[in-house]
Length: 342
Image (cartoon, rainbow, N blue to C red; front, side, top):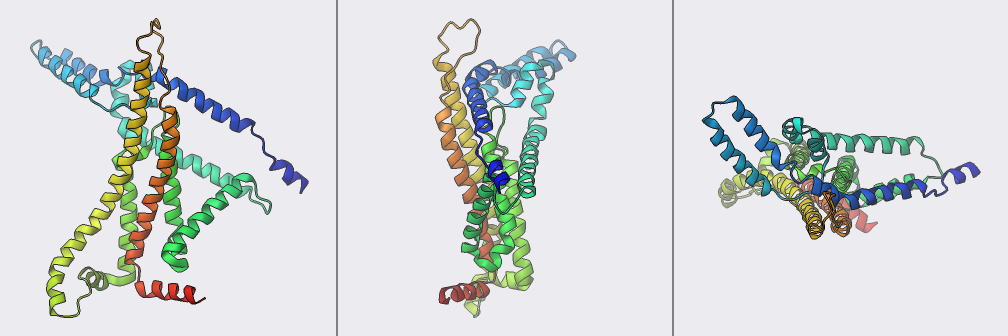
């Protein structure tokens, strides 16, 4: 008992060191951004000029024009927080093209893999050290799990809520971790890439389709899409309703993917704009080549944490509602009536 109390005693040293490190890196990010502004813009142009050296002399002018066009396109890219690939391109300019080419194919999936890895390590550590007298980490996870259980079972009911709880709770925690990951210096949210949000939406789409075809069968699904007709007029209208339902089934995951992607990508643009504004404010100072800047993005990072959590909750709620719409309504209504009478 005394040993557990001694183990659960709050020791703020590590927390203070971690928060202080993140704040220092965040404050230093304007200086880092000002030193990396040209790294991304010169990548495509250097590739074009390298190819032009292997061609004939007459092709140099055309490559130069393409290089200038590429630079102009790079200048039109939205601002963003400094990321690890930009630092690597700055440190290794000879491999800048390879790093930029592999940006979408390697670095973003690597970020998602790191999130899953650290989440597994963290949760498995809490699970191994679980006890009757829980630690603060165990209490926090129990509160999160209980809150998600009440939310999901409040929509689907206890019968179906416990069936889909593992998927929906994992979906919420994974999206929150992905959204928050972009607030760490040199990192970026994987959910700011449409392929990541599209993959999550496809997962929900598959869960919904497997559920409705396994619970209702092919004839039941077709009857549901037709509006459950009972007379001649209903069957005539079903000719129009079935194509509309087919389109709706594919629009739902598309809306999920675009909503999450647009909001997280917009947050990144906002933070990047505030970051570059902080760099421009001090650009008139004679710093003798030393990059300077004001961390104007810092207040908006706290707002981004709140909005990122809300977006994860919205994605999870909409997925829960999509599942609710295709569940057998009789069982759900009977369960609700039993709970109300009880």
